[in-house]
Image 1 (cartoon, rainbow, N blue to C red):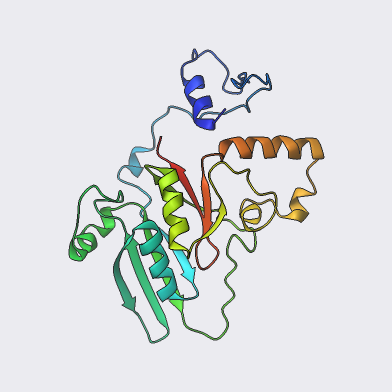
Image 2 (image 1 turned 90 degrees about the vertical axis):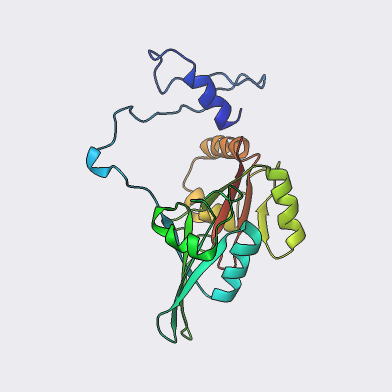
Length: 233
């Protein structure tokens, strides 16, 4: 049962039901779905009114290649690049109308005007030096696992990425989640870490990931940053 289905089932239960209650799967196996803990309904601190996540920042090895990837593969618009010095450049990209592509066209100047009121922007920082060790999530597990992208039609998105030919797809729709390689490393499952988990629990982890990620695409950008592409429905 997909995580979304589990959430919908849980939301319809009585509020007296414990958050950690196991729900039976609906695939006939009888094995329980994983427990889900919901956050509290308490409102946020009023002092944080107006806060929102505006952008993520990526350190890139090749600014030209990264700009091409994100504009071609994901449809982001290049808003501007600041040439701070001959060796340092900072670029910004985003979708029109506050972060959802296709909801309305904006000129570059309009995108710039709305920059600090937009969500889902991508900042790129490029430093031109002979040696720059950038440890992307696919090469070494770090505090960032992936960038999440939502698309209206995940199958069409996959076909488009495959047709581009320049996108490294790590997992396709319908496939199991890889047990090793760049995606596993980005999720914290490097071989050394995974070996510390008992075999039975590993199998349970794999089953949950496979089911939850069944309709997801995983790809990587030119620097090895992971993209999780999931359907809107």
